[in-house]
Image (cartoon, rainbow, N blue to C red; front, side):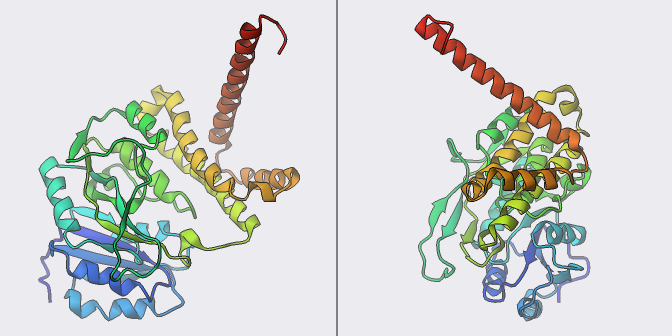
Length: 351
């Protein structure tokens, strides 16, 4: 057994729901990490299969470095179990890992070294390995990223320029997934950062919080995570299109509330409300990208009804109103510019 005064360098937090076929591989990848001063906290979101029993079978192998916690009820997402995991974490740094994914064996050692060398708040990986099918053994994985633009070839400490960070985030210069980051735990506590407990985009909002608050944000070329494409996972489960649209609209409404409450605490956004609107636009674009997948399957009346019902539930309609009013003005200005350009091109006051 591990000694009572053991202090882990990294806490790995793993939300879990019905992954009995895959959680063993996830834990195996943590067992063979070249950095052994770690603890693993699995939080079961009320699985209905044998996932919890599989985790318990690993207790002896981890010799006191593995704990299993339980959410009170199924949340349907990753935010609640991740937040539970944070309450129990004791490592200097935390890393979030989905229980159907795996880490390469030197992932934690290399990220920890970078974090210590730079005294980083966040170490940010720009790429990951992706498997297009659930089976991982014997596979050659493709390198993937949700980020656009150039990638670093060595660790780079970014300037703490909030305006540039927001602009770059808007231009997809950051991968937002929670499992691509090693984060100093006390940094999260100091800035009161946790996952908004909503069904979708919790990673997206969490990434914005970390980006804006981290004075020492380090990009690295390391590829640490093997992302398993699993049709039965939360991200890929087929649902009724009405439920799908409703859930994404609700995520936008709740996301606006969460983002507005957090940003309103920061002096920078009190002085720069235009950039606050830009963060709202980041959020809305991600939601709209998902809604467009089912947009044509609804009539205008159906969409109007869905939007009205969910927007009415907003705890703070001011953020939504401010954003859509700003977008309306911008759209009007763009139309005005277009008309003016046409008039100038044709030499006429008619278009």
